[in-house]
Image 1: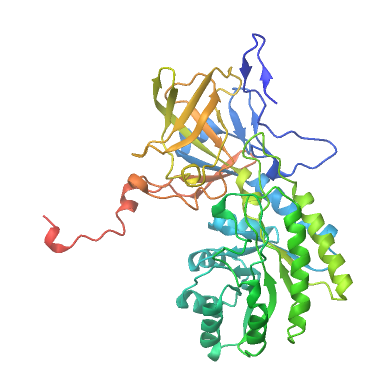
Image 2 (image 1 turned 90 degrees about the vertical axis):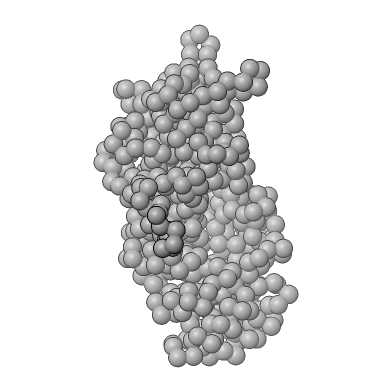
Length: 464
């Protein structure tokens, strides 16, 4: 809630800080700022015991700031809630496409989570971070032969997405042990989210069509090279609705029953992820517990009705684990006021470190980290520095009066910011730090101009 200055002017205060309760645990996905966020005696934003303005002085900007406590809390809530409500075995997987790097994979692994990967590079990173191959699940709709062979050789679980992939796996596995796979099926369940992140409806590039189910189960049951252990489905991302996930859980148990009629004993059921987070005050996602509990109940009830043993239950949260654990700090530079239209305030980053606003029309909130209690007197548009008119991070942001050198913090940037970052306009990608207990550790080094040309090759005839 926005507090009010004695003069009647709104001021930032603690409106975005986590609202701790003595009775209920905070679900990180429902907060705007990391759980450790507070305003210190210097009226600066502090995260993980570290003053954000000091972090920028030390590491530069733009800067991703990842709060370890928030990430670990989300991991623990997913892990422990499944154990509380599901009577069978469960395994939470971190959907690492949200942010795949050594430190994040290592933290998730240390909390008992497995890792969901979607490329050979993500697989390599997870393995290098020390994740056991049997806790890695490899997704994707067009894995290359080289990637499939890498997955087979390292012994990870492969989520087979289509006929081409199944047939390629059979071919590659001839000289190997049977390949452990799950089948990705399209459930035909729609939900309200951005078109680009809806995956459960029938018109999707992912998964086998439900009309092919008989043919798929027949084929897989006849292949000695394939050890099919389960089914997987995913209906999308940034979802607030609860019923679609209940519907999906019930449908997937029907798939287990159908598979049994083809002699397939499927022991794993992966319901995907998709739980949304709070990007703005108007967002109202379910808590982690409110998402997990009904899924567990539906699967247990459906299995009891079908007289099926409980499968190992897997899920793959990404955004709801990592997004609110991270903020991005920028330094404010130029500004431009167009009378009766708008005021632009420019930062030293933009669409290269956060492409979501220009890609998905995503909405964010921001504060000025060095003026946390200053009156909110300006409505401005936060513009990036790229040579692109659409490079706008936030429209109509309510901020204190700003000046060059102020530190702007954009919230909820842990998911799909660094992982989708680019070198557009040849900007080096930012650094990232992990903060905990007043200590900051560099987990991603800032790129240099030399890094930008490292892969460039200049033909001899063009050299002066």
